[in-house]
Image (cartoon, rainbow, N blue to C red; front, side, top):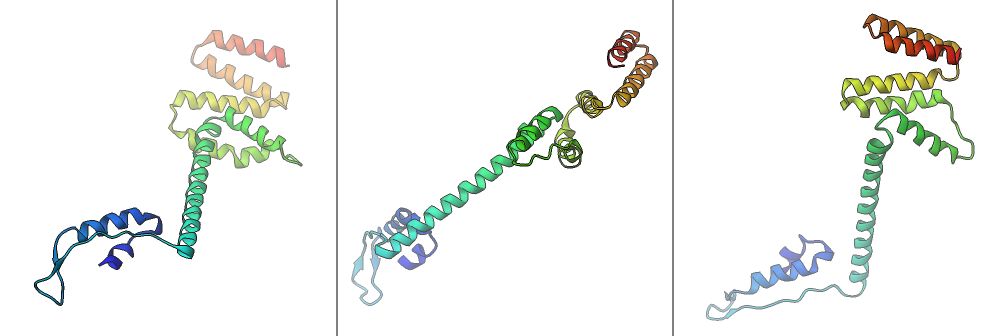
Length: 181
């Protein structure tokens, strides 16, 4: 009877095994050889010596494994929710990560190839207006190193604002074009 209960439990579940055995032995039961003799009992279960040491090592290894799994999951969630939730955060994360490297690879091409697609996947649930703002911010960031490309973007924005008859914003792009050109 004891074996059928204890073999289903882990070594650290000694208390649970003891409780189940106590419940199983708490009622009067007949003996298999003497019909007029009944018994009941209470049993104490414990591990001793090498079994106790192995059990403790096993429990520690399981706890360490669980902790490692939880930390890895937290890191993935943190990366997704905190660092890749928008392009600005992703850019700052990229800089922080790679400035601490011995030979940093701060290539924005590498960022665009590896990180930006992840940001786009995380950001897919945002509304269209917010996504458009992030796209424009990303385009501005890419073109900041090349004034010619910056002028093209300003021209496209001006044409777009004129198309929807937002003359005040079109005038603001004129002012911006004069500052950068």
